[in-house]
Image (tube, rainbow, N blue to C red):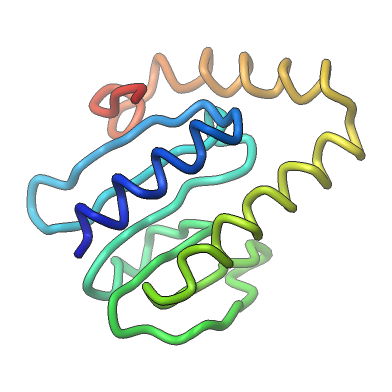
Length: 131
């Protein structure tokens, strides 16, 4: 189920013009998608709750229910698998809000800045691949 959901999301986001990075966890079935170099956020797709110290903006979790919560100033969104298309709509809407607020050129600069900052950091940026 995780693989099918991930493949579907990658296909949808790429068709919608997102730049997608993918990281598959070594220790679980979780998959992480960084969208537009993280400017929109990162999506966690999983069959279990995540680690408390990691805060992903979007979460698609088997057996979950739909809700959002403020986690120390970061609003996090949780979707059950059956709401996968609603999740896509939310991400598209959030990107539109950012582009409307900052403009396409500045949004593109945010992407470049995130990519440059990420190159020197451990974890996701060194292990993920553009798909």
